[in-house]
Length: 235
Picture 1 (tube, rainbow, N blue to C red):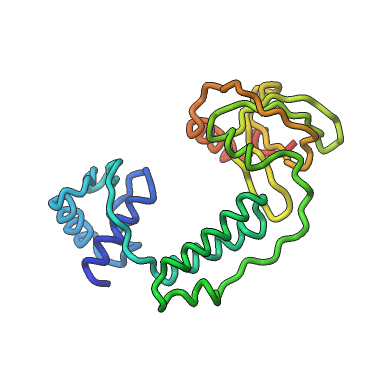
Picture 2 (picture 1 turned 60 degrees about the horizontal axis):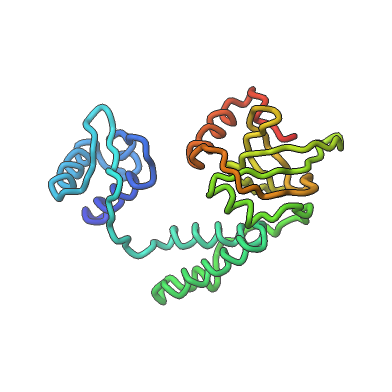
């Protein structure tokens, strides 16, 4: 790998995480020595790239740093197209259309030598199985997640018991078989996973729940990571 390419890749590694990345982890991914990483970091800092940290602790890229991206690699093109194929096949109608538009935009922006990876891809997502019909406007639910607003739902549990809930939607989950909505439930005073096909009705409220959307998602992820916690299940 040319040194210029390695410096760019180093920035990309730091760009994709908010947590400090150690020199050992950088060296392993770049397939160089830690000494080379220390030298590269020093050079980048000398060029006023806002990298913070030190040896033994790790490095982070300062917020607000903007560097025009280089052309995508063949692997990056295939990764983007494969992901977009999956969403186009398994996402809700609005998200599926956006994925198809994304594939078209990627193809239009690529040089001729890479365009065949989009037009005639070497990878493909498996065809979707038939999924239960969503009983909520998923595109609107995504907007309510971004805006931090509440939704009132009529929901049926796995046993068929109906209940009315006011929820704070945090994120949507897409699986092979069903779509899920992770949310804070005011009734249970806890996070829950709601299957979209079990929502009989939804009222999109103007009330805001008062938590920053990113903060709400972080709280959900912390609970979901604790597998033994009751929140790590669907109802």
